[in-house]
Image 1 (spheres, rainbow, N blue to C red):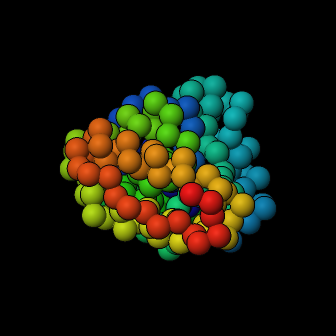
Image 2 (cartoon, one colour):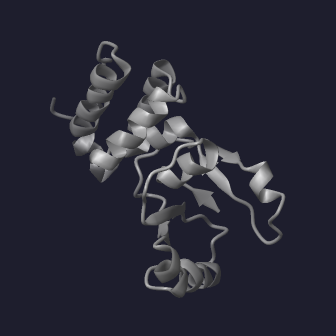
Length: 175
């Protein structure tokens, strides 16, 4: 299972904040049967959700704003105790990039916490952001890039305290 979003941050760092879902990226390995079983065990309104307040959300791979070739890390310590599947967590910087799409207060708090804990370096953030722009340049969401760039610039100015980066947009886009 490929964990994305704040769940990936929790699994790789000492970060903790209240959340209601654990996002898992849909992959070819998650067959319809497996997705159905996972959702029945840990989805919304299941006994597990009612007991813990948390539920599993399987996210279609085209939805998150991820760098082309997202980086996942196998969680060896956690996986040593698992027999039927393994867990990978999205790289912390790639999580930060993905949060620039929506960038609500929780997203901003997550990114700020990762910067404050020194898990996000400016140069790598820019490199991974550009990889996401390249990967989605022919996607219907490419028209939203100026908004994503505004969010990136907010992170640079207000959190990293560095000058805003120049981000080249696809030639066909109006600036």
